[in-house]
Every structure is written in structure tokens, then in C-alpha cells.
Amino acid sequence: MSKGINPADLGFFSALASSGSLGSAARELGITTAAVSKRLAQIEERLGISLVNRTTRRMSLTPEGEVYLEHARKILSEIEDMEHILWGSTQTPKGLLRVNATLGFGRTQIAPLISDFVKKYPQVDIQLQLSVSPPPIADDLYDVCFRFGHPPDSRAIARLIAPNKRILVASPNYLKKYGEPKTPNDLIKHNCIGIRQGDEAYGLWRFANSKTRGNIERTEDIKIRGNLTTNDGEIAVNWALENQGILLRAEWDVARYIKSGRLVHILENYHTPDADIYAVYSQRHKASARVGYLIEFVSAALSKQ
Picture 1 (cartoon, rainbow, N blue to C red):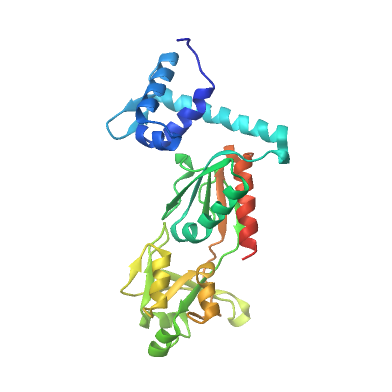
Picture 2: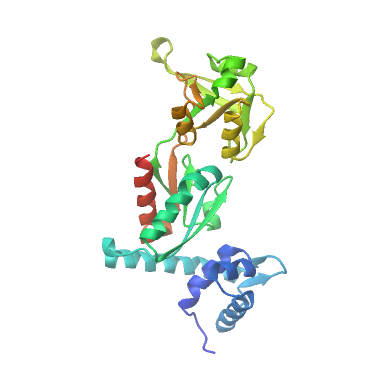
């Protein structure tokens, strides 16, 4: 077997490193675990070095493996850049696209849009992963992530694709029984439905009211109380519909229920910190046709809602 680096191995090793185990890589690549192990062994034999530390469940990269991965991803990114320059807007998106989104938004909004996207671009293979909070971009677990709020990592590219605000809602029956709060401080007397998601401070709702003296915005934090908590937004909305309490939720998630009269928007003069929707991706994907096409597709669809 000839020594040296085979360009065809770069994408394989990048996928392997992202998967975290031989078995996961096999599922992602659509081959057997034995085939993954054999190809890795062939790469290591050609290079004359060990790239991966193997265990029964997990694997980790050797120092040489880290160097190989870093340069492999740079080369793959440069190939994508070159393709974009050569073909530009005439390029049809194709290949694997790993997408991450938050649980509720991913299930109700992103998943249906992805279905429409692959109908239009059948040469794209999409893997959708939903999570409570977005994985760190350095982990290379996704090509593009749809998330609420600007990411804290300055290494990521974040594109605003849709404005989003959180609003307070409750069912008419709940308000009839317990009364409607007139100020945020009144929420202390109510049963508030809690959602534990991401890194946000749980149980603390922040409000601002611009209609104060001199039109100066005043903010206040309210520590809410309630006997129902979940990490799933859809469950929380259902509890509100079942007259269980007051809910702070994204407008996109409850707008249809407000329109039908099943939920009521309360404390309308107060607003909470925005949670705009961003598409987040790494610098090496900035010229990727499939990433760009999907972001444009999702952005256009959300703007019509």
C-alpha cells in the first residue's frame, strides 16, 4: 500500500470524528461498523501513524489525529469555496447537510420546511437533530443550527432569519377563575408554567415597560411560582390550553391559539427580551451552497408566516 494522504479519506475522517464512535459513523455513512474500522486502519497504515484511540464505546483522537482533522476540514472547506466560485448561483445544492434545532421549534417549524426543501432539492441528504440547547460550534456536530438568540461564540456566523418575541398567555377559563394580572408583580399570585431550556435562568421572567415617565424604559425581574415545569414547549402550551396557568412563550408558538380565542395575550404593555431566530454556522461553511440554500429557504418561508 502506497504511503501518503488520499484526498478521498478527508471527508470520511471528518465524518468519523464528528460521530464520536465507529458505530455512529457507520450509521451516518450507511455502511457497517466493520467497514468503518477497516477503512480507518487503511488510512493509518498509509500514514504510518495512529489517528484514533479506540475503546469499546467511545473513541478519541490522538494528537496526530487532531492535526489531520484540522487540516482535513480546512481542505474540505476550501474545496467548497472553490465550487462556489466556479459555479456560483448556478450550482445545485447536493450532499449531506447536518441540521440542529431546538425541540419545539425544530419539530413544528424546521422539520416541515426540511421536508419541503428536499422535495425541491432531492440531491441533498439532511440529518435533523433536535436538542434542548445548541451544541457548541467547536464540536462540529452540525453544519447549520437554527436557534433563538445570538450565539455567544464569536467564531460562529449568525444570520438573523426571523424576528421573534415572547408573550404572556393564559386560557380564558383560567383568567375567569383567578383573574387577569395587571402588572408583572401580580404574577406572584398566579400559577406560572415553567420551561427549563438551554442556559436561560429558570423561573425568572424579565419585563420592561416603555410607558413610564419620560418614556424611559424600566425593567423588573419577577421570580415566578408554579407546580408545573417541563423542558418541552409543546407540553407547556398544552398545559396552558388546559387551564393550568400562565405561560411565557414565543409568539409563533401560540399565535394560532390567540387567534382562535383558546388563549389570551395578557400584559400587552410589557415586553420581555427578544428571542430572535438565527441561523448559525461556522466560518468554513460560509460558501457552502447547501447551507446557503437551506437558510434562504427557511428565511423566506418564515417571513410569510
